[in-house]
Image 1 (tube, rainbow, N blue to C red):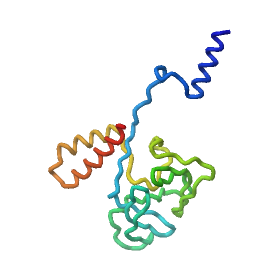
Image 2: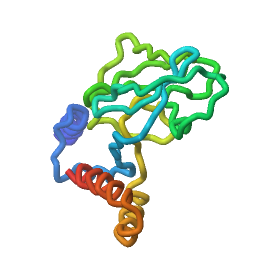
Image 3: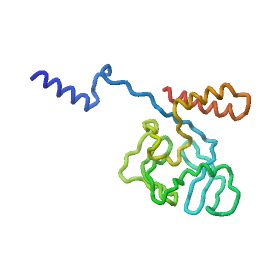
Image 4: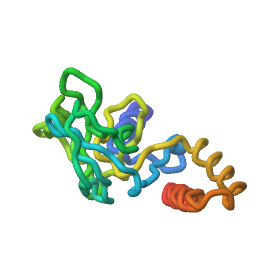
Length: 182
């Protein structure tokens, strides 16, 4: 009877998160690292337009201009970063970033985010990136694997004098590495 009570007590302790820290398996290291990039030019699809500019640290677009979809002009470099164009014919699940928090919802084909009713707001620091998971449509940066991050940092260290922008990129990656060691 005593063994059975101890077993039930152990199950309850695990279920309630009260397990002995010496018995708990260590958390696996994060495979992906968030790299903040506030210099990247992005486009946000809104109906028949792409509004372009840069995302600030809170995930808000600071607009520089707009382009009508289908209009015959030479597009600037931002066309590779249309953050709300998921090339879909239907609404797609995603998150919206606001000041360190994530809101779950869907992005319509017209570029409108609709929050999921009753969904829980998540702290960004608690979010775990999964490559095939729902994207964060207005993320002020990107995720890269820890391995790629360290490899790129090494390469940049060896080539810093070749181009001025290498120093900026190295500083951005160093900051991401330092933030993810905490």
